[in-house]
Image (cartoon, rainbow, N blue to C red; front, side, top):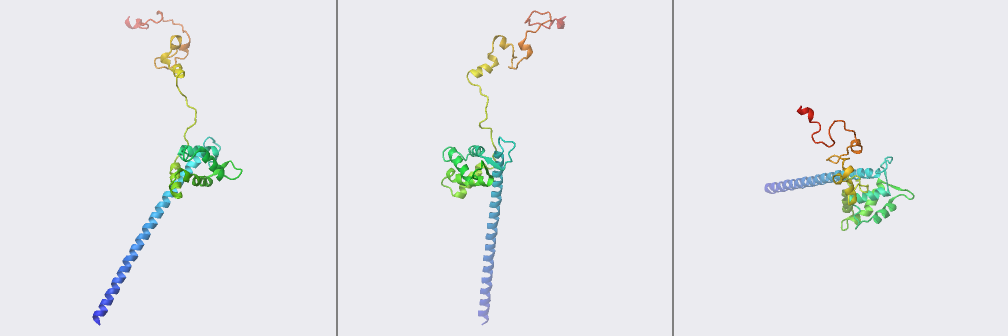
Length: 215
């Protein structure tokens, strides 16, 4: 009887220990999952903050009076192009225009950030085919996050062909050459007018100004 009782107590004790170990493992797993979820949420929040910041910067581009809370179709297209959402193949300018008109409020000429997010959901599947909707959306946001408008489309000075020859002062001859110094910098009035030389030396004399130094 004593042996049976001891064996029973030992089994109950072992079962309790196993139960506690299992409970500890479950708690650790739950804690790790919660930590991962919190980390993912923080990362997503940070990314969306970067996306929203980019939205505001593109929304005010070219319009100093804009609030940055709404974006025109022109700036939406610019943003999609410069951030790489519009690649000209999977997503074209036509696709971007269609989606913009689809998500904006009827009669409105601009979209809000919430409508912009809806537009990205519409475009992400075309831009990243083969990915799940959520993966494609995050990939699109990755293209946009932290971006700001560039100067694409602005007029730049070019020097080609005849224009380059006209602006290269080293190739000037005659009176035109006299208007610039060796570095190509203009001499101003001295290069455009014949100034009277009262030094007493013959014009273009190389030893001009040396008499007082040697006598």
